[in-house]
Image (cartoon, rainbow, N blue to C red; front, side, top):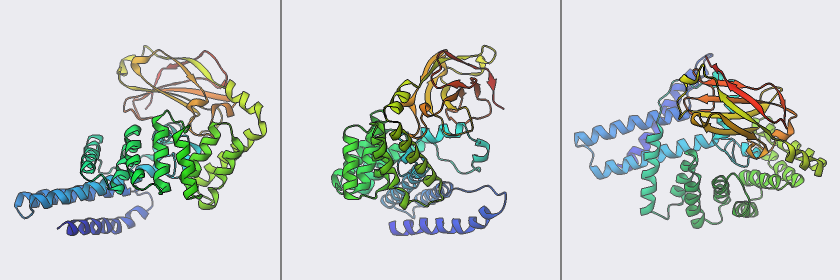
Length: 396
């Protein structure tokens, strides 16, 4: 019975993919994501399972096992796709530019881009509560089957998607203890530990990364993390060398390769600058105050999220430093500096002029939405003090 349901799930996914392919190739049609298809298939089979159980054609034990397989596959698909979308680590390889922030970096990047062009098509959704429930059941099952390396790995990645990095680190540690020579697990554990200790690779995370590279010198995530660790310590030449080792393993025209090359170039520039570059980095930082205009204050709830970030004054790009607070914290005294950087190549100190943006997000997402409240400063030096930002505009 279990084999039947697994095969049915796989066949259904394949059929849906074949049917949808002509639609997504049509000009102007909205793309359908693999995640949407996975969720749709999951829900369809769950309904069938419920119907069979109710009709008496499926025993409770078989129902439980079949549902467990469906949930496990859904969690794996969701965590894999979310991971691929993050700019941290081997998830799309954008971690070449990050000390960590797998979810926030992408979210804040959308805040300064063209979100309208990135809006997904209407699709079946699965809410945070459902994901939390699935993750909780997986954690309970692993208490009974603690030798399941794949299960611990999946649980770690699921916790990372949810931003629960300490729990992710514990799950990856369970997996790594049972498979100590797997460089991917060591890199995943280092990544989660770094996030749990304030986005720093110092200490155990760095040691794990170096061990991963001993086992596999070409492991992309380990190379990215090792380069980031070297960059954090001011070893810019070493960071450039480590990141450059990634390039032969990435499609040369891809966005990943472009970001890695940018990081390499930035590290080389700082290496040449030597102590002058270090002094410049230490001096950079913008301070000021964010206030909410009384005219629109009634449109913001105390628990609404406030994003404050600096972006380059010229052109668009990933934010250079980010701060997240709540409306109840306003008026807010802020400081933005390189410790809040999204990527090593995107530090505030590398841009002489920046713009400070403050946005009230009702949804909690950094991507601007109609109804969000926003204010921004004029271009200011990256060492500006007492910058005032008034949130006085409602986005339409």
